Image (tube, rainbow, N blue to C red; front, side, top):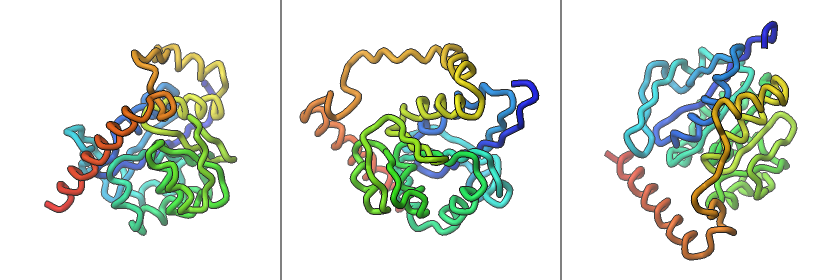
Length: 225
């Protein structure tokens, strides 16, 4: 990586963000010595919680990050509340104009859609939110990672690691991406073959939907406090 251009990666964070949505890509991209990751939100220094107790601090405000090379938009229960956040949507539109890659994980793609960046494009997101992509003129695709030019969307949560490894191959090379993958010992061998609705079957899908609904209700209750 010696001699390669330094790249700024801006990861959007917010209340109700899913931790693994951004921690996965962060761990992958942070392996590269020419990459500097900033966690960006409305106010630098502000603390944000996921639905549980995980807390992350914004290291920069939107104004401080006008031209990131790469944008990562994670998802989570908090994305619904941001659909009308003009500051975030305008920032996404602006930084996309000059970014090398604009990416999302899970329901983060819905924010890209709300910003008008997915109109007419294929995109993916968490299986439970896939149909909502059509609200933004996108074409939903059941895939782990979908690339459309410089926009890359990843499916639910853990797919962010896959997306980030592909991103490393694009900004560096395949050998580097493979080296990062091995360094992380990213060799998925899940104990159960039920990582998609098709594999899980209707009973598990129903239970998962109830779990997601309960989390959404819990988050809504916290917002109303």
